Structures are given as C-alpha cells and as structure tokens.
Length: 161
Image 1 (cartoon, rainbow, N blue to C red):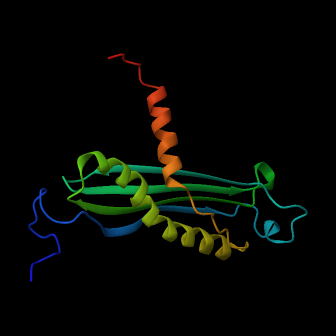
Image 2 (cartoon, rainbow, N blue to C red; image 1 turned 45 degrees about the horizontal axis):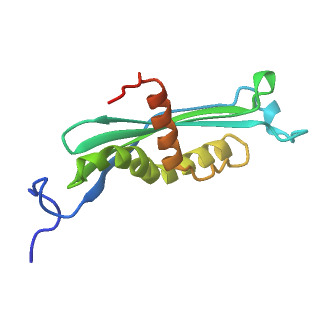
Image 3 (cartoon, rainbow, N blue to C red; image 1 turned 90 degrees about the vertical axis):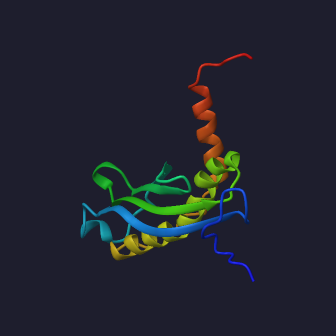
C-alpha cells in the first residue's frame, strides 16, 4: 500500500489536493451604538448592507493565506442598529494543482470553505447583540472572482498582439 497523504510527493506526481491547514478569526468588531433603545420593536425593517471581499497571499510555494472580509450594517446615521466588521482567515495547501488553476482555486474554493464559519459568526454576533440572527445568503464566489477579474482587466492598458 502506498502513502497517499502527499508527504514528500513532488509537484509532478499524486492526486490534486486542497487542504485547510488552519482557520482563524483575524479581526472582529460588533457595534451596537444605540443600545438599549435600538433593541425594541422597529417601526420598519432596517436597511441591511453587506460587503464581502476576498484577499490572498502566498506564504510558501504550496501554501496560501486566504482571508474573507465582511462588513455588515443595519440602519444608518442616527438610526444605526448595528455595525459588524469581520476578517476570517485560513491557510490552505495546494498540492499537485496545475499552475493555471491555482489562482481560481485560491480565490473561489478557499473562501467557499471559509464561508460557513463566517456565516455562523455573523449570526451568533447579531443574536448575542440583541437582534434576530443575521443569516447571510450563500455567496457566489465564482461571480465575485469574475467581477474582480473584469475590474482588473478594465484598469490594465490594452495590448494588441
């Protein structure tokens, strides 16, 4: 029987693998500036805004730190109910992945693995802050990746070959 855990496997042999080495809460803030007044019944549903961003940096030839940053707010100005800022990270090891597939895997699959944990932290924090839990809808990381790629292409000078 052969050793299939990837230890000592070179970049040419073995099955492709994506391993989460560690996950961690890197930065977190929850503000409830108008409590306890904001905790009673609301006349109308608050406007909830959510922004998500994915960042990555290479730590070693096969290891990447990926962070999912999320900002959420309910209400605005004097009517702000809560504001949440969260950066959740992970270190991922990619083994035997073709070079042209590394970037999409790091920017799509890695955040997809982190998202359920981010979603639970947000739901718990809003509930613990005195509000109904904020359950974030699943995020289409493929669309987010394509949007970022289109924005990057629009900012690059065009070259005709």
